[in-house]
Image 1 (cartoon, rainbow, N blue to C red):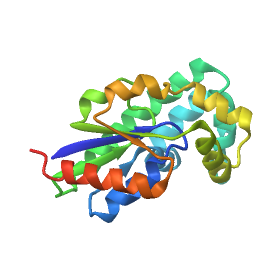
Image 2 (image 1 turned 135 degrees about the horizontal axis):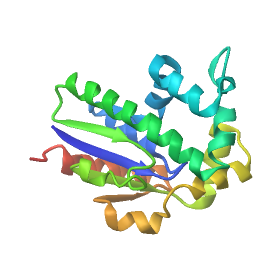
Image 3 (image 1 turned 30 degrees about the vertical axis):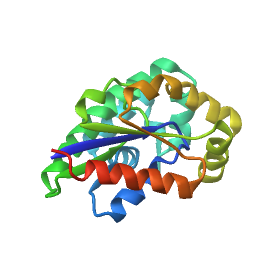
Image 4 (image 1 turned 180 degrees about the horizontal axis):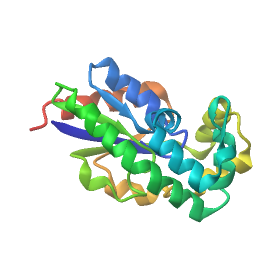
Length: 194
């Protein structure tokens, strides 16, 4: 089985690109979404989060993501603590996901593949890049957070120019019809990987 990573900064179009590969019948693992699921369902993980960030980090609806974001994106050490707690659970969850797949290719989406030096885990990596303005528009529309909050979060991700040499494929996602052509070409290259 070949594991293809898809990465890029916030709002670069990772999820939309992943939808394209899903439409081709390729199993796709969304690490951010699964991490959120685990943070609300895995009792051991919940205990660790409460121990490190306080019991009030959860409310009657589950994890208070806004409260957690306020903590971790304002204190660099807190973000490291969160990542060190959550990532092993996501890794284990992904291993379970792989065991249930019969496909010869699986996609793994994560914004922070390079930030955590995980590139060696993947057979190929696709990097999604978009202009700062396009990313801002998408994030504001999707997450309804302030410009200041977006900048804090982006500050924790590597600059695109530092990621480009580490990626196997770079997709400039500024006009979707062109992006779609690029993704189709990448699909043709990876579907026959040995």
